[in-house]
Image 1 (cartoon, rainbow, N blue to C red):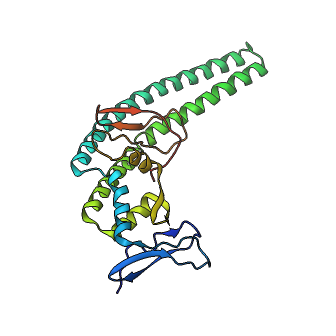
Image 2: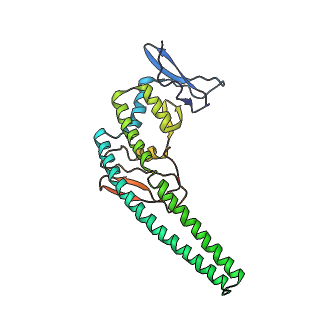
Image 3: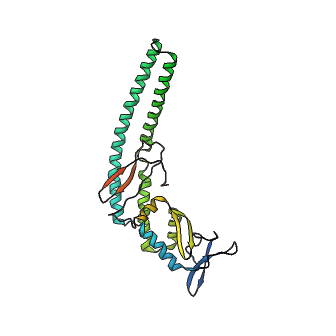
Length: 252
């Protein structure tokens, strides 16, 4: 049975039809099916050439097993720091919440003592209640989502190591699965392979390779609260973690 590793992965950039393959003189050639009729794409691409193009991209997002262990060590250190920071932040927020509740009690006493008018009481009460709700939401975010970035970050690092292993093994079927996982819109155009990688892989690829000395990649956490901080970049050259809040959920 003829095995064509990249069938089902590619479409023609010109007409959008699927890319098929055939065997000629012992080699596999990929080309447009032209099921929609005329197509400007006339070229055939040998599987060996396509594989090399794919490997070139994989190399750019590859992280060696040795460097993967070092990244995990940094993540573990950062987990401890993040837990301590979250604990301190929650304590401070709870103190603010207690102050709001005390102000509400004093406001009620003033109202019952007819020190302030109904209108003034309602306006001040609404403002304090809004602040109370916001503080409560921030506390829940830190307690429930404070380290929600960690597991996606680990999975991302593992995927970079998987890319390195695929370059070594040359397993084309696994390459196909990996490419589908990390991006979309895989096309052939004029014997060239293109696709749209997810942003985190694109950023790593732009740095040419995920080597230890230049690895810097983003971690996005799930959350809409701009006050919920999570690691954004890990630069192992300086072993420093730069944290900043984000609103996107990309690692999924």
